[in-house]
Image (cartoon, rainbow, N blue to C red):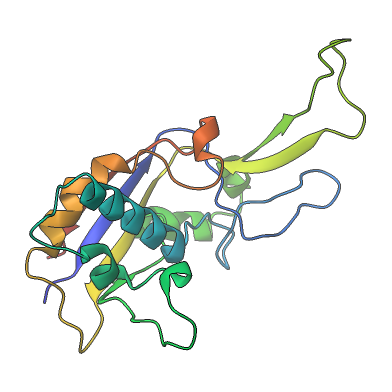
Length: 198
């Protein structure tokens, strides 16, 4: 069974957090690898793909393949009955990272170019009566600049996915129009494509 590359062309600032704050400057920082390069977790991508498949299925796109989302990516935790072991999916999704040559170059770069991959955004709540900022409402997050990332999808050994799984995913990729946190607030606009690896 062949493996595939999921290309994620992020076209706006994006934030994929790792649950850590940035001290006094920002409340949330971007998740990085050991070399300080931004990473979008495979778990996050798997959730986005599963959600797109489930929406398409609810709209009647895949009436010939009931339960394809659970088959490919496993059962959602909230749908598992108490005392049962969840059924795992038959596809693995790696973390999305910068392409190899660019990542290698940035790893060896000592001029501080890696710091240019990030920017801080701030927002505050406003008192509508006075037009002034509310006390203690300033929040900041670190975002990454628009980049092209790549993740790898492959069958889990010993678990055979449906033969048309890649075509099914390609059909629903337009439903994933953003990645990372605060997608509904304009961050992380993206275009995803799936290509077979040579």
